[in-house]
Length: 196
Image (cartoon, rainbow, N blue to C red; front, side, top):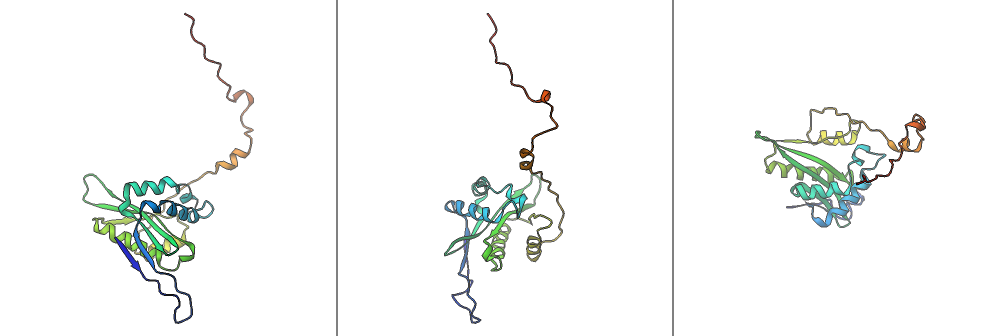
């Protein structure tokens, strides 16, 4: 399924440069590397540490292999400028089907061009056609941009979820002074075979 969204032509009446047309389509295998690299630019350790920890090539490949029906890209003549990766969940003995939009990313220079809204709407329409009755997303509590976006998209009932992290890099640099030499691990003696 493919949807075209016209962003305009080369110049607007007010003299501002219009953005190129954006196409929303299902992700293909050839898109995996480009989606991963765009995510690397968006989900950096300093900007979103909790997303950075789980954004890796396996994450993208896993969604593509297990839920490709819910993986979409936004594309212009310049290549992929955004993506949405999600899944659906059916519980045993429940008539309800849930949808979870796990990853939504748009190239930084296109943040205010409605590409994220178009990706989201495409994802939402797809999961609704599949029978999903509830769609959920998650975000860091202090990510005001994401929270405002999802509120604009109609989400409500926010619940706080706390993630804790411990940066072990700093601990590796410092020698452990709390371990006495006698408590340090000793090498095991070489194994000997029993005499016969």
